[in-house]
Length: 408
View (cartoon, rainbow, N blue to C red):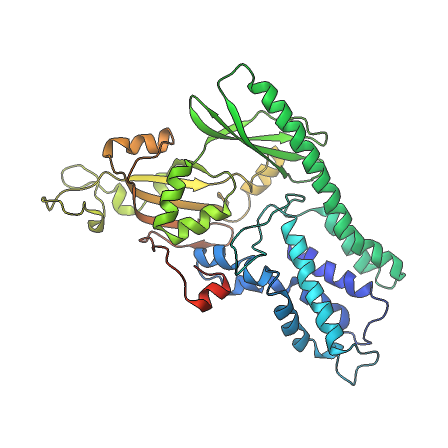
């Protein structure tokens, strides 16, 4: 959820209290506390940090009381003896922990995925109720903040809206999901396609618009489709289709790379496609004197008797369709944002076990047995983070401190 909504929810929570400390800092401190878990972005120096830390340990249920305690210590104006109507230290701690939990709630109702069970599990919880920016959720909160002198009952209604509105959207999501599953099953009858999974996501201006992501399995392999739905759950666009990333390949790459493991945990119905030349390493595009493509020396086939032996490398792109839109004018707006690109990309340089299978890997989505991950690259355009091409790091049990922080 956007920081404005987080901060506004904290301000409304303080304004809805039966009494509050008589300090001008009361409402601002509540707003800061409700936005505080996103301090994690300050520690995200690399794309992998971003995957592991953003919506990570600062958003976990286990860490909420500790973060609440830290916020309480910083919010001394609410409990110091000189403040008229001051709260007790435990009461401030309880309130600040509540603000952290409120932040977590507003994040899990989006489609991004929040690791609320850290450090015990990296599972991402997403309720797919609201778009990343939802004016129907945010505007009532801002209106209440602007009417801060109004009766407390108005503030409580605004605070209740933070829970009631997403709950209604969750119900609509369930209804549209059931409708879409039935419709797709009927459409698949008499064909060789089987619908494997259906996920409903809010589109911009939800709950008036939704997106259906669904995976089919047929003669052409697994395919992920995206289709726009209206407020009644009926399609308003033709489906677009993308090659699904083979589960076996995902598992193999996750076994070879911490970054791959974290990225595929993050994605929803990941897709695979050939990597555009602009993202390939320069040496992959530079012809040698003999006209063949040059590759890094480190990628030479191990144990080869010939010093000039080169593997046949394949480049592929993995991403998911979650952060797009099936509304044409929204796509146009997204395309004009700074650094417009697919928001989250994982790119790989692969050495197939059988060189003849390299083309099939990209064009047909087939898993080449014994594939080796030579190099990888994470690129997150919106945050401006790029790992550039580098060798993968093998997964291993992390030290206790890293485990406690949700790192791998």
